[in-house]
Image 1 (tube, rainbow, N blue to C red):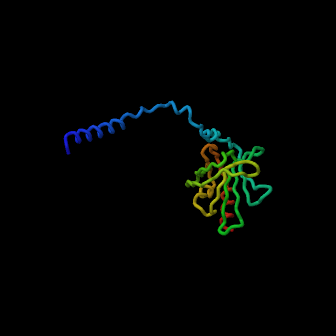
Image 2: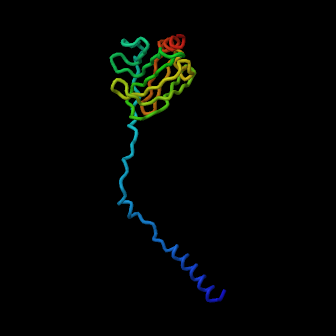
Image 3: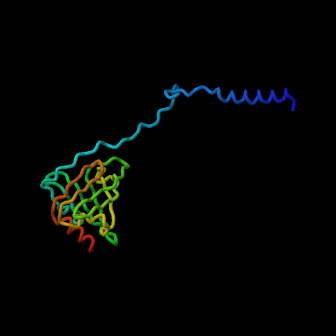
Amino acid sequence: MSRTAAFYWVTLVIGVGGLAGCKPPPTDANLTRGVRGPEPVYASDPLPSPDTQGADWVVSPQDEERLIYGVPGAPALVALKCLGDSVPRRLRITRLSPADEGAGALMALVGNGHIGRIAVDALEVSGRRVWEGEALAKDIAFEPLAGPRSLTVTVPGAGMVTINEGEAAMQFLENCRSR
């Protein structure tokens, strides 16, 4: 290869390499021209924990397989339903608190020497969206209900419900498990 040809190739390689380095610097000018995406969806503001002084469990007047917890004269806070059409029996727990559409969470039950977690979803029940989940009645997640001492039921953003001492939930759970 002649010196002229070598010079030509070196010049060509340097020129092409130089052109590659001549890109304009990044700019944010095009950010204002872009198509706006959908607005981000955020969870609702967390709710405060309800006052449960004087709250108690009662059998639902509409369904003897359903136990509801709350302060007399106020809206119910938690409900348990023994699902009698399945073997082994299943237990549904509902936190009667507003829930965002499409939301899911873990409900924590803490008390009587146990901690249980149950997956709950925001479901439409009687025209309201509430937190609801179910599992086998014999699932250890329900063990906090299996004693007479107080316990707590918590869903993130829906506050913590303190279940006062008593045997109603314990007996309801035993009956559901034994049928």
